[in-house]
Image (cartoon, rainbow, N blue to C red; front, side):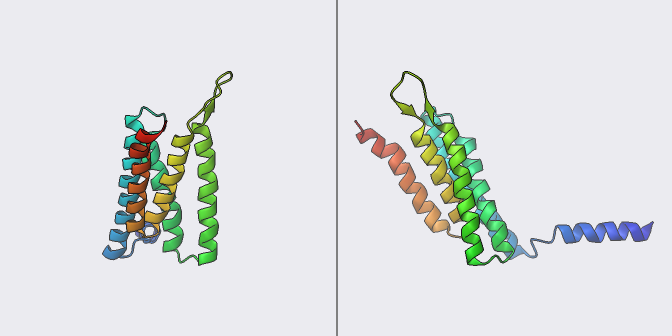
Length: 156
């Protein structure tokens, strides 16, 4: 019985050994936290405007994109393979964005394009944060917020 318990315990330790030290744990938490916070900034702006895809959606999109690139990076993926991962994330987010776009019959206006674009940008920000490009992610978030909040005032 003790031998079985030891096998189970050692297997559990091996299964949770993908964060080998404090440096890797700090890197993981920093990148994921940045993705969440920056996604939240864009989502909060969308929430204030009463859009259907708001705070939680943008946070989850950014977090998801970050983890999709962070795990392969931790596993030592090659650059060519990483480009395929990123392509998959971008294409997949397109389907989520398409769900935010609404065209009502009889109404010539298409609604939700800006929200779909903000979801797409949130994924890009998540990818940047997940790859350790936090400064790029912050600058991109500021640019997106400028476009969403400031440029909107000068439209029409």
